[in-house]
Image (tube, rainbow, N blue to C red; front, side, top):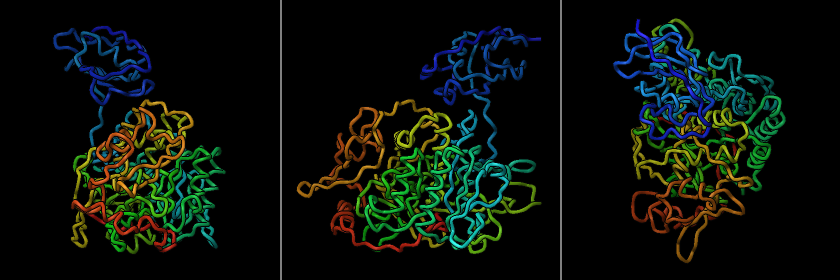
Length: 554
């Protein structure tokens, strides 16, 4: 019988950098030192084999592969660098799961890697303020509180079908798509988090400011009881006054001040050219709150890679009306998202084409329908909420400013300059431009955020800046306000947060560059030429809306 050489594993310091270590797989480098990971250790050809009594130190031998001179071991990440220095070690890689066509949003934002290393959201409370949550296998045992805020109603169940869909995207455990015959899994971003169901939308998807405000305040009251660290608001309405006066925005600010991260949908009016703005200036409230993380939608095109992803043409664009806050903050997958289905709900009845047949994900055709396909920034928002939950699972001491700053700084900023999207129902082709008002600080990257070790400067809020304009030079710039995190720190300079393509080295935007609008040299005039976005007379419908959740693109 072959024997492996005896190895003594040394625990290394928590801050050790693995960069450039050719013996460690890239997805093992930069792990949090306390994480435990199953690794396959390959020995140099010609060594003498393995011994069952191998000393793994803090690790644990799980299996011997004597025929190929390898072992499977569970190891603390902190020990991997020292292990790799052993001259008898050829290479160390994670025990990667075989992909069963996982739902594509999680791989696209890097959340699937986080699952493998223990970041699942366990112990973190996420409040879903929406149309309610109905029982679903993927959420079984993790909806810890149910409460209704819809006037003249009692039940917190999801009659519309939207809140359950949102909840499964954020926190689904893939129970219904796992097991005998399953070949696709639809797992949420934070699959072990706890959900607090606060119902505010009626069976037709409508609601009111008062019910949403009451639910936000209730989440603040319940914060300590359920460790609520994140609120998801996949809803919105038009902007009618400054965020400093808007009661929805003020409720968001209260939650922020209470230490809760508030994640809000940007809205689905990016195709709206009724004001001649090509969809710019269409962010809704409370997405206009500078204290919120406002999320636009990407189309992941049914793959786990970001390389082919494009912005959804219906995703609302900034800056916001009246205050001209730079929004959205981030983008995430939101197109044709497969998530929790509620039989008999309004969405299921009115949009039956969204029902996902069992044959799409399992060979076991006996059983109830579990999943539904929907699109919108409502679907992108819980992806970011889940990312925030994972970040707080890893670093519970983070403040809402810290979570927002890290997610924005580490977001993927590589994108095309321009793009197009075609609606598969109408065949209409829409053009898009990847500027700061469409793409925000970039495409959320969960794994990059979890590996970020920057220390957030104390007392520096990460509120979204407003946009200013110099009428003499026709230059545009970020208005940071007093003591804001962006722009005055080497770690958090503008070019590191939003990318340097739209800056001239400071906080001034290129005045004559094509940063917004169409693809012509006069594109910027769409935003500024007729003063639409510098006035306060634009009126949108007041009803709270989920908006556009049946929008589709190919």
